[in-house]
Image 1 (cartoon, helix red, strand yellow):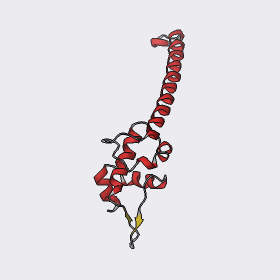
Image 2 (cartoon, rainbow, N blue to C red):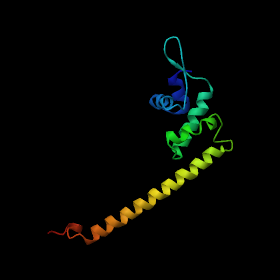
Image 3 (cartoon, helix red, strand yellow):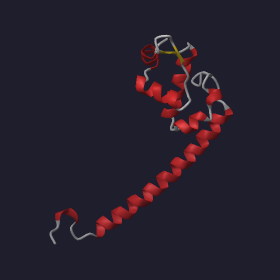
Image 4 (cartoon, helix red, strand yellow):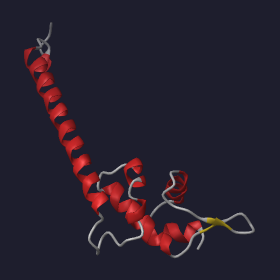
Length: 122
């Protein structure tokens, strides 16, 4: 199938599909006319890439899961590599939340003490 059909079947943009190829997550063959041609397995692979991105993994993370991309990650148990990456990403998110919460508190204190807060004039 060509890139437009793959995009339609997976909900991914053609730009995203080209990006996935660039990152080594997706492969295609070139037809004689130069168009990209994808095999039927590309549909599942793209759906998995999108699922993993939506779950919070990066394209770099997903590169480590290439062996899992052929599975149906929605219906089948996930591969062990994915679980480890989820745990790592979750920890990174929690650390970021803690840092942002600390920043929020500092900003709130600065605003509470600021003489121009709530429209007061200097």
